[in-house]
Length: 245
Ligand code: NDP
Image 1 (cartoon, helix red, strand yellow):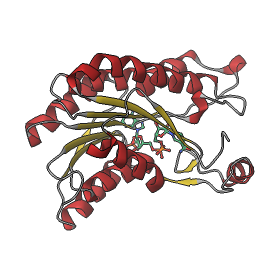
Image 2 (tube, rainbow, N blue to C red):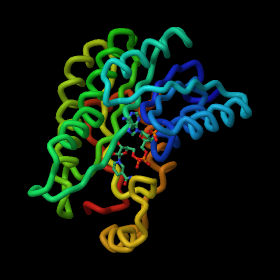
Image 3 (spheres, rainbow, N blue to C red):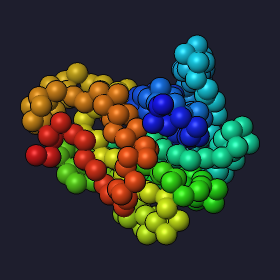
């Protein structure tokens, strides 16, 4: 049988990129998957249709992570539709770059809201319902470990925040048998990281000499979501093709 059969998952930011690859992978591993999107309704609908056609079950929920109530409602909708929640993957994220001198404070607030506060709000709502064996996974970033380039100070802060939050949440939820982990991808080819000129620079910094693929990150998330990963918690785990090596 499949590793996640009978499990119910919610993935935030599942309409594109890494989140979409995670939705597809958890589904092909047997889970029933709800996912949120903000702007990409058509992409979300196509994913649901694709999963339906393959005999899986998926639900797309319009929920802007900038609004914590929307994220909490998405958790509740998942539970009303499917009865419970076993796996929460916080993948929704935005990248707003600017040198410190020019960085708009509205962008600080927006990035903090989507990349950090929504992770806490969703986790809080899900944790109230999760049973032993539950899994909470956040997509952080290796920028929490190494900035590498100018303009990313606030983005790096948000990813450092989720790494620290992961350790705290693991302590809160460990006694209930729920694990909490943070995946830190390196440069991965998605809409967020699609500039060909940047790819050429990044590739030279990576031991494997190439960008990551969304499905490679999804494979790691599927492992952490599975019963096999039962002794991993509070960890920030690098998957970066050797960018930090
Ligand atoms: P993309 O920009 O390709 O996709 C982002 C996804 O998040 C989309 O599905 C988008 O949905 C959703 N999203 C964005 N803002 C919101 C919001 N306010 N509410 C709900 N959903 C939202 O990004 P990636 O796939 O590259 O990134 C996924 C995660 O991985 C992010 O947390 C990112 O920081 C992290 N990451 C990415 C790396 C990379 O190199 N690509 C490296 C390290 C970490 P919609 O279009 O519907 O709004």
